Length: 305
Ligand code: 13P
Ligand code: SF4
Image (cartoon, rainbow, N blue to C red; front, side, top):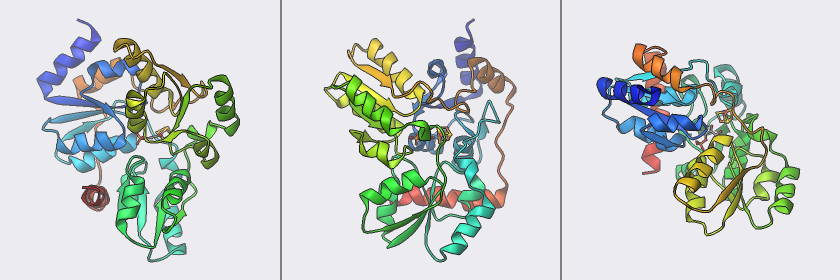
């Protein structure tokens, strides 16, 4: 039996689902129940009736799934798959940041640990950050940890003052303005689509800025035939696969071949099979931290309903 069939059999036997972020190695989709961005996957984690959630993603995503489904077993095959941006903020530097700007609500990007979320007021993802900040209806917010996403929100909401923490994604930061300018010259008929974790100059020169899932939905609706994608390679791999499979006749070009998140690429089908078979690499969160952190995510769902 192939590894794919073996995993699918195990899923049935154990009443398990696999949630997969769209930066994962593309073959993992063959065993996945849901593939998408952070917001979509957290909604799926919150509503599933499965007993086991195997998260093909990075640590903060699996932790969020556990916060939202505390009674389920949440497994992360590669327990060391972190997020370099999430690692830039911790309890100590968050406390200092808050002390510098007291009594201001803190909006926390989902790319953060449960310990950090426990000290924030409301969570957001790249697809709802603008909506979350707007609906808070306050004149000033602190935004952690991604300063680029915070600045993107600031541009959309000029009447709210957004004070950003100085975190960033080292992978998206690799995308340079000159690469966007070159892409314009080399692909004059293409649209350039960019993730809001990119810097402001890159974002300004793009045709569309959105989360991974928003980018994937945008290209399906567009009548253009060629697209340059300024986010992680997994998105481009999925789009080219689907273009072939469904005869879209569309071409997707990655802005720079180095836009690969090494943590997202740690998972393999073999690792997923072994994790599900042995139920190893389980996510555990200390109860008090979990109670506080889940409030931050629940508030996001509450205000964006
Ligand atoms: P999305 O919310 O768009 O899935 O982004 C997650 C992420 O880590 C991007 O680098
Ligand atoms: Fe974190 Fe960047 Fe990787 Fe996304 S691409 S998981 S923000 S390091």
